[in-house]
Length: 343
View 1 (cartoon, rainbow, N blue to C red):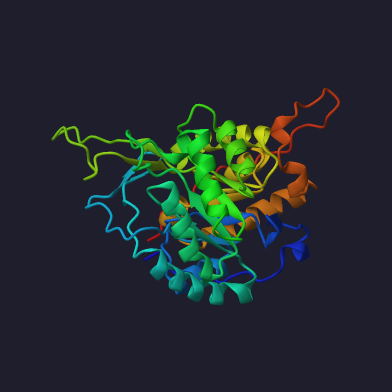
View 2: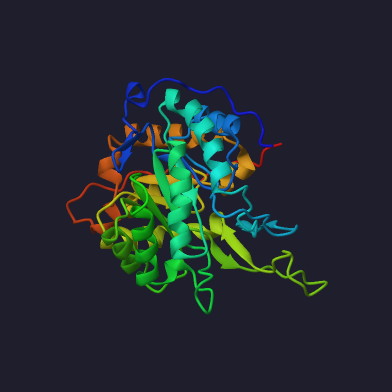
């Protein structure tokens, strides 16, 4: 269990001199920092605690068909991040919907939106899982298409091709009215084309990116350290991949992007915002530092914007335009301080 969060600063961001609110598919977030899926599960009290600690939105753990997940060891800390193979363990979408409804009842008075998340093994199953989750009342629905397509001969992830990514999006869109956030994989030849395909099929926003496949082998035994052998790489090592992916997605489509991967400071958030993200997901860093990290990054970001007389709109996407000789010097960077692990 993460450590207790510090007292929340309830002073609205505009009163501190800068407006940090953003909008995704008509849903307002008080700040652009989003709890990434899977890090803290879906326990209602913990989700509420994370919202009170400063998160601008909460993404629940992905739900789908009932799965027990992979055996331990299923998570391993490495230099620069985490390698995990939890295996999408969950009680099933119907049971998850009940947990989400309780969570939403706690989050709505706080003005912090809830993002449900689903996975499935076939296109048709994605539609069924979405229909089961919809009664939860979540504000947005993340569609995790980075999982293997079990109907495919090679188990290729749905996010690996435009036709399968679009087919999943259309199947979910046909079942629910919730705004869809398609979560894309980083290990594809052209993520911009995948983003365009899902937007054309009905996605209202993009989450970029999911973890990157990786493996760690114990040098003594010569065996992979995870029981599943391979896992998903997250944390600092993923950030440059995420920044590049967000940049490519923003160049391809004009919808909100939740940039996710390796964020633990305001400087990291500014990288993703500059690449074109509307909001920024934080995951592995919360595992290390606890929910209080959200207020720390939020306040760092607000202070930096205020100091340099900039807005989120001015920062967003600025990497897509080259500076001219007459432009003022680049503002001083935010220190890349990585929080110490929680006791």
